[in-house]
Amino acid sequence: MKRLDRRNFLKTTAAAGGMALAAPGIARAAGYPERNINVIIPTREGGGADRNFRAFTSIWKEKLGAEFEPGFFPGASGRVGYEVYMGKNEPDAYSLIFGNMGPEVLNWAMQPPESFDVADYIYFGRVDTDPGCLFVGAESKLQTLDDIIAAGKERKLNVGTSRMAHPASIGLLSLGEVTGAQFNLIPLSGGKNTVAGAVTGEVDFSVLTSGSVIAAGDAVKTLLVFGENRVGEALDNAPSMNDVYGTDLPEMLSSRAFGIHKKAVDDHPDRFEVLTRTFKESFDDPALLEAYVAQKGTPEYLNYGGVEECEAFKQAMLELGAKYKPLLTGA
Image (cartoon, rainbow, N blue to C red; front, top):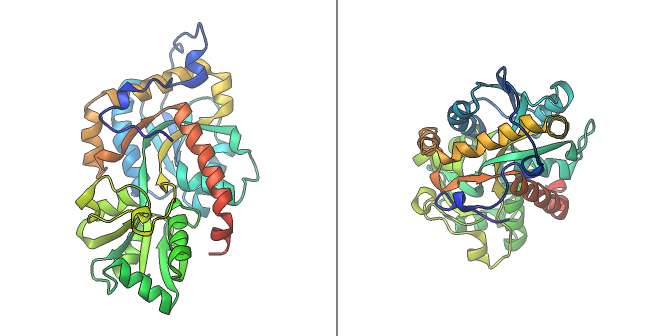
């Protein structure tokens, strides 16, 4: 997957709206949008996805000319939100889903959805790319990576994760394979609970999307990143797993993005053009970075992606999930 940083993402030549933008003769949707846009968020209110959503839509609503009304449907590692979106929301381009492509697509690799096909929706607007990491509470007795590996060879350590099928979970299980340490993954339902689990000692340590760990500040200490550490001291200068152990683990990314019914794209290409165009215009506005940082977002992770980038990432997560499924199902 090609990574675009904040400085050079505007240089991308990828079409923001994929086929919808490429189709000749499409006129602007007359009067669209005529009402607010409903957005399903398949995680808890107040978490990282919520903060990210509020930051981005505070700018996007000005470009689109409509408000965004979120609905939070946590449960079953995100499956509940997708079931609600695909089963109850009309495919009319007035309803979107704001998901975390990494863990939520991995979820489909573990168990395909029952009431719809994964191809029945597409992601069209990526907001960020955020590697997973391993961290402890500031008061933990396990203060170094060596402490964790040594303790994990003596007993099975309880490790918090926001959901079992998560890129950071794959990173943790791979660490166990490489070192021989034993880990028991415990899904704690969301980033806030996963951070709290490490801070309070409910679990020995946790793995999670690094942006949420950065937002936790001095309450936590990062010991390892399952990808490139682009933020240095913000993650306690923690090394990458590949650098420490000589592994070739792909970056275990969370990547939040807006999705839409495929039928809405097919039936309303003019409306989809408006959505994709104004989404990209939001990245052109310097106010977006300010809003993102105000919501505790990490500037280095703000990263535009359109239909093509999102689809490539979605397929990569499906392949990665198939590869690591035995590790997760045996966790």
